[in-house]
Image (cartoon, rainbow, N blue to C red; front, top):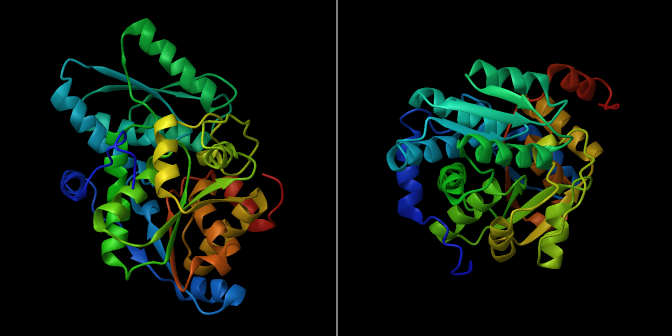
Length: 332
């Protein structure tokens, strides 16, 4: 059970969040793909693999759920707020821009220098004002905090229980639509998606093991999970920018310590292979962080069980990067 200090959303809260989200975004599908089943079964015997397709939302990622719930709360509880600011590598920013546009809020997003051009354009197309700052997400986040202090804007955090409540609905859909899974593999970026999976699993009273997945080149959450306290670590992943976390969030870590079965690390080559597998076996496009759960599922096949699942949490990969991944798996 999760510590009393961190109250995860219960079933009624998750269902209420889903009702709010469905006013704008329908439920996404979950499928068991024959070719993925065959691929995984070759590793360690017969297995049924279920994939939750969060790449099928209007912004191509699961984050839109949290943005809609957070911005609705802001509209009701803080109607004086006119401008919000946050930091992102892309999907969180698209989520806020998507929700903010509906509510007439000004959305300022800080991205690291050299961020994905296509994610940047997507955020701008949704109405966000972009500020480039810093060498990584952490420096972008610190700059967003300085803008909040300087201008009095409302800063939307990268991790918050309101965001968890929103994104928990993807796992709630998955767990209620599928036969009970032995193991569910979820990426850990800043923690909302993985904590949301734990919340949904707990709310439904399931025995499914939730396994967190990080890049071996961005191991901060894995190191922190093993140590039991926050440990910072530089990120060097070139393909899984959505999980390129340098400094874990303390509250997220507490939830993960209490609710995860374990954390699996995979390298960039395994992520690229999973991106190719998704395209070859299902003809779905996955960004690096979107494919990292499948990479872990395949790597961890002997430990997962006979019925396993993961989430394709985002498909927002730059086209030139994806072309190189599909072409020969070379450097990106």
